[in-house]
Image (cartoon, rainbow, N blue to C red; front, side, top):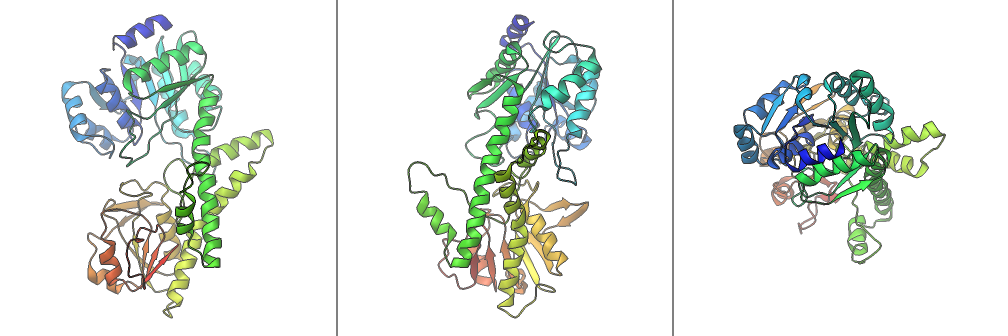
Amino acid sequence: MKSRLLTKIEKLEIKVGVIGLGYVGLPLAVEKAKAGFKTTGFDVQQKKVDMVNQGINYIGDVVQEDLAALVKSGMLHATSDFSFVADCDFIAICVPTPLDEHQQPDISYVRDSVIEISKYLKKESIVVLESTTYPGTTEELVKPLLEKGSGLVCGEDFYLGFSPERVDPGNLIYKTKNTPKVVGGIGKDATEVIAAVYRAVLSSDVYEVSSPAIAEMEKILENTYRNVNIGLVNELAKLCHEMGISIWEVIDAAKTKPYGFQAFYPGPGLGGHCIPLDPYYLSWKAREYGFHTSMIESSMMINDRMPEYTVERASKILNRFRKALNGSKVLVLGVAYKQDIDDYRESPALKVIEILERQGAEVAYYDPWVAEYRYKGRAVQGLKELTKETLQESDLVMVTAAHSNVDYGFVQQHAKAIFDTKNVMKAIKNRDNIEVL
């Protein structure tokens, strides 16, 4: 089976399926199609399926012209019908893995997808899970479901592995094509075959590990490393504020050291799909072994508390103007979870807005990247433009995303008071109305 599949991969004869056409799946499907593999994308959202089939892009990291050309040539198409799996040799699962209301892993999207795949899985297929999850998911959940539903045996009839997504929306240097990939299959043959597929698609290195669990844990390590370090600087930011020291200047000074230090920055909380969520996956799994990830859980608590701390600081700024938060007009600049993207998944700005409104503030937001967002079942419209009148009428302007296409000089000129949680206004000389986190 291995030699036959390797030959088909080398000749670009395998057909590829990608389950989930979001921030991970669509760029992956495009790259596989560009490499010469006929690719089918699947999504439960018919709107996404229709847009792909019309050659219309909706993901920032995908080039519109590439998508349109691939669809027109027949190399890429999308469907909402799982039966397409029967025609695929390689199936990548790129579905969401959020937390549930109890902050525990919700792997229902993975489970449901795997059950559907198992109904159509054929011999000599390759299945790869890319969704971030807890160590053990591929072997303990995916493998038994695939075997039960298909009647096939993993390692004998099909190959299975895990290769974590490494998507950084808005990154101008590293995209799906040139970001190194980690692959861990169930058995050496599976790892070799899966790695061969990615090597045929990517221009980056493909690093092979000994098992899916290693690959799953390394993905958790990547993001937990960032979570812990951001928790450190967030805690130091609070201390520095009490001491009258600029944490931003402290970090700028520390990063002059050419070794042993990597700069992380404070903010109103953590956003995106991975960094705020992955440590919860690890701490949840650790409890199965009677182990408590104390350092990790401490950083999670610090970061989770930042939206509340941000609102507390905002309230104190308003107090200087003899204004209560209740009834004040607050303008939030930026609801995306990071600068210059339209992705607001897990954005701390949404939590900040929720807390502000809960305490009686009248909140409006402006984000040149996000015209509307949905949060807890509610759709919220942003301001269409940032006007002098809007700034002047606001009791407080809070900067919660460091978008580069906002005129912060204009903001400083017309706002009564500004709370800059991202230090994006650091170059502005007149700082009488600016306070930094």
